Length: 300
Image 1 (tube, rainbow, N blue to C red):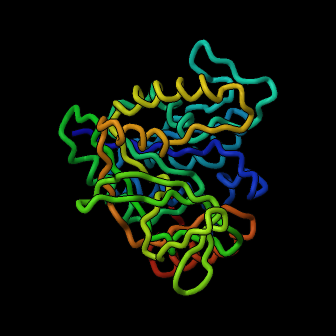
Image 2 (image 1 turned 45 degrees about the vertical axis):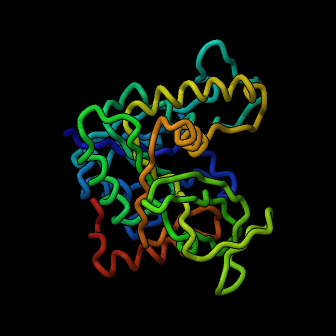
């Protein structure tokens, strides 16, 4: 059994945040949110970290982020660029937006041959999520295929005080398998009883399980996703803003009985910097986590 790899997607534009939030030092010693993910991954038994970034900020990324991990855990960098597409597809000359999380994940195929976990760079997931995922991936039989995992959070633990959020609302079987994920794009708390989607007018209980892009896959995922990405490009490759998402791939593989996704639920509080106004609260929360000895100071 090999140690699993952590794949961190750090190539996003950060449009709503107003800058490269992946590199923002929000911890008491200037730690990025990624630092906490790496710390928790090392503690939980992951053996390698792969970062998906853009070449435009590679120099800053290597000096501000990678340098601190040199003696902590092996790291590799891969690049998500708009024109990195399979033949015969070409990106529209006017396109500026990356192709989405599904495309970002595919960039790591050449450097991952073991079970792996994929997360967002700008999300704080908590230590329990990494422990659950590491234990699940480490105990997989050799050469497992189609045995995937996801850590879900109660919807009420994933909101922002600064605006609406997009969340993948999960439909689970009685034995904890994922039946489907539906993206709801304008969720907010309306009272102490429910969470409301302004777009669909639907209401959800606080305990509704949602996906925060905390997935566990075996390497066969890459081939399935590559095929589906080609289908996506055939339909949407000439569009300027369409994106290829991981949950869309997962939903298709579950629907076709190619894979199962076991959902592990955590009661941890997610937080992140979706909006610039989220930053002070993130800083305060991380400060408290250091003060109560959840994390050492300095982190590394």
